[in-house]
Amino acid sequence: MQATLITHEKTALITLFTDFLKEIGLHVVLESYDAPSFLPGVRIKMGGLSIDSDRLLYPGDILHEAGHLATQPYHIRCELDGDLPDTDLHRGGELMALAWSYAACLHLQIPAQIVFHEHGYKGEHEHLIRNFEAGRYIGLPMLQYHGMAYDEKNALQLNTKPFPHMENWLCLKGQDA
Image (cartoon, rainbow, N blue to C red; front, side, top):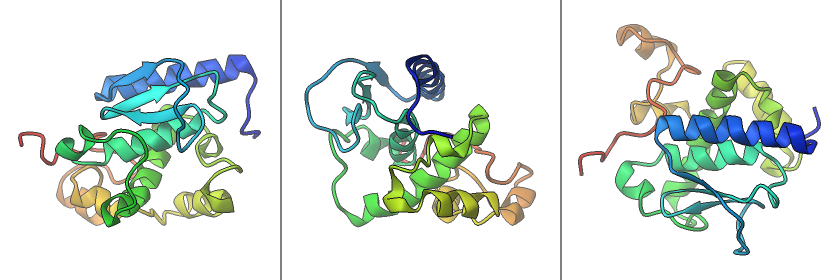
């Protein structure tokens, strides 16, 4: 599947993704902006996402960036603005964002190639998809630590479904802080 989409398909995906993100509790704003961003057309702004649909090249980037926000504890998520700092916390968060966005693809019933497109992931998009499809869930241990999703053993003990089912789409750690 081509990562670049015609306008109608792009608009439909943006609507699907933003509706989902708002439903799970992430703040999303559609707006034009001139500020630079790590990924064209999507940036982290005051703990939420700002999306410029005219500049957005790959709609799946919305879900990946949302994964970065969703997997951070509340008190950290609320402070994020602009590019993520190059810290161990956020490098580890990349693995959680990968798993989170894969689960979101399945939940939204879209091909994983929409998020894991050929123009991202340092050329490893197919490798990532193959691993996820084979049940090798990169990032699951950290999602599990945050109470967001569980492997088969822990899901059975907790009487819930295993990943790629998400028990919580947002990290609730620090919610009451």
